[in-house]
Length: 479
Image (spheres, rainbow, N blue to C red):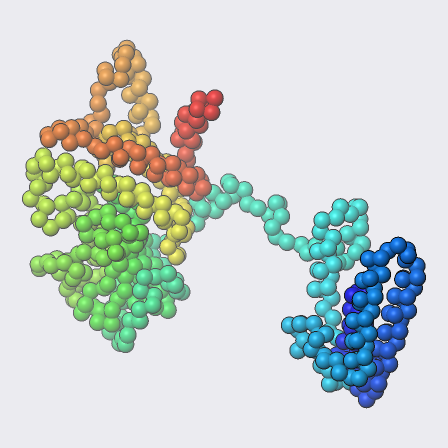
């Protein structure tokens, strides 16, 4: 208890020293402070004596503590009377100390009512107050927020919003910036009017002649930057995938071709698309070529580059894109190797889908969400179809066709699955040198299927059929 009293006494001294205007002004601050300190000291000592007299005579621990504290306080009092107490020993370390002005007479402490009310309200957060109490006390009233349950959008509203944004997503458009562009931190250098006119000409071609499966965004503030995404063509291991490319027009354009970077995610799913993002193409000068295969400053355009990548790179059998491998296209060994390459390519394509879903490139968020919402069901059906042994890139039958086929088999009285004729697209990888599709393909595809199913559900894709099958399989295991 004596320590508490000492604190009161010292704090009284502290207030008097720091706020002399509270004791009658700056001119009499020293004498007023001493008088106030002496009065405070006498009051404290009188209260101590009363407490000691009122305490039990058997409370030896209390008496001992009181005496020791008193001796320490007596020494402090002697120092205080001689004016030798150092202020820094009793000042509270306050970051806001500079906010007080000790030199101006009559200055007032700036009271922050909102902060004070918030501190008071925090103390009552865990209390169950009677109804109506909070409404009558201003600092117990919580500020209205927009996070209430009534302000959350339903899943159907989110899906409708995704559908609308996807429907009105332009094939070509200009944007203000490209902060996540691969060449955003690479200045283009000094350019001239001819450079600007040529790029504007390319923009016009892109706006008018882009194929339906390619989308482009260019920057208003950085005319040298361009981003494009292309949808993988049907009949290839890239079908329904989204593949993003960043391009920069150098200062020497069109004398030099544009520089193009592929967003690979560290996966090499084509001999022409490196894991580091390099795009190997004669038109870009990154591979040798002849005649019209090479860049021509008078005739070549950015539109030509994008169409070439989609048609020549993302093709049906990308394995033969590798220089020298085209000679194996006409033998059984080369065909089997190409099919194995397609298996791996499709897995990488699925992984690329997940990358885009989880972190869509800037300015293409609406396209990514809407595209996979629309094509999610077809992609999952293809995954299932390929896991059953069918060739990657082959046409996946519609659900109606599957039902008719099943009904036909039942009508013929088929007693086993061996009696059912194999599908036309099914390929036997055992043909030839005894090569079979690795078991890892199905294992990896099962994992990718589950991940895609979850992501497509979030985007509102029609996945009821696949969710029902998954639920049916999990029920016996749970039982």
